[in-house]
Amino acid sequence: MIIIRKIVLCLVVGLLLTTNIAFAKREDIKGSNDHPLISRYPGAIITYYDTKEFDKYTVPLGKIVEGKLSNSLQLEGKITRIQYNAPQNRSTLEIYRNYKMTLENAGFNILFTGSGRELGRFKKWPDVVYKTLNPIQGDYKYRLRGEDDSQYYLSAKLVRPKGDIYVSLYISQGWHKWPVIQFDVIEIKPIEKVMVAEKAEAMAEKISRVGHAAVYGIYFDTDKAYVKPESEPLLREITRLLRYNRELKLYVVGHTDNVGSLDYNMKLSKRRAEAVVKVLVFEHGVDRKRLSACGVGLLAPVASNRTEYGRARNRRVELVEQ
Image (cartoon, rainbow, N blue to C red; front, side, top):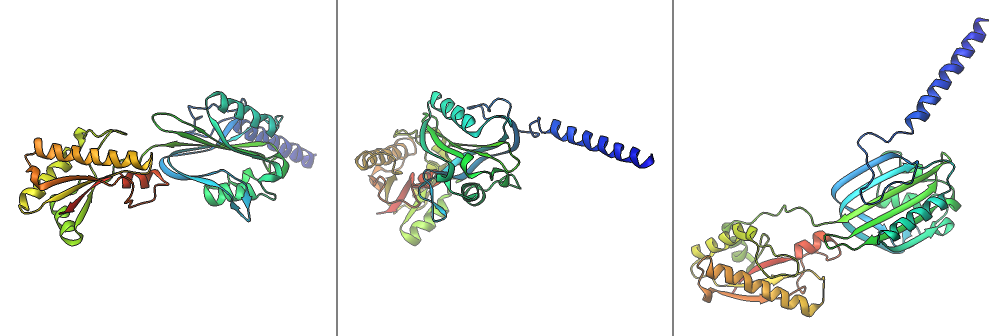
């Protein structure tokens, strides 16, 4: 009789534990939220959430060939990564088509889609994309592993004046036998300004050593050649450089990234260089004969234009000794 009571007690405790676990699974993890752009699939819960103000992300644009993506896009910006458990009675196909329709209705352009075994067999897609290229913390990357025939993927892009947005979506019938959604959003934005205006002494040392100095801290609006007020600290340092080096004459050379045509960027870089010279002469009292404005557009990059960080490095002014 005592043994029977113990068995019944164990069964009751086990049932309570199972019920509590099931109930907990209906709640989003603490601190998580849907992305404000696209809401979740009805009934889904958030099991993994991670956001970074600035990081890199590889967006798949092609199938896996010999263990690697045949085509991809390297992005940098704000990254939001959300993993959902979807209702068990919904198919991955139904969830995928709902997301695809929602994204298209929101103005997204679908860049790449793939499904089933064309994404690779034996867990290849989640291992390459979410374990190697865009690692997910902890064991959550393994929850994306599932049946080959039930997996769906799409990447999409929304063009916006304040910065493009990309979506990377993967849906699979997870190892625990209910649909899992990995929804990653990449919001393109420049890296926060971490390069401060160099002092006159540092610029003088560079010019003396290599004949030129790249300076960061002269700001323009996109496609404009008007020097913004926040450029003032660096302009004061350039003025100080010229005052302490009375014989120094400079080419003020404008540089751009590779967005737009060569002809357009050549003209823009020249106009920006001329704008800098104009401010130095008329607002800081520099002798006009000591400055010459030139523009070389995108022809002399110091970093790859494939990333926003590289493009930001290439948008600069250089002071070249005459």
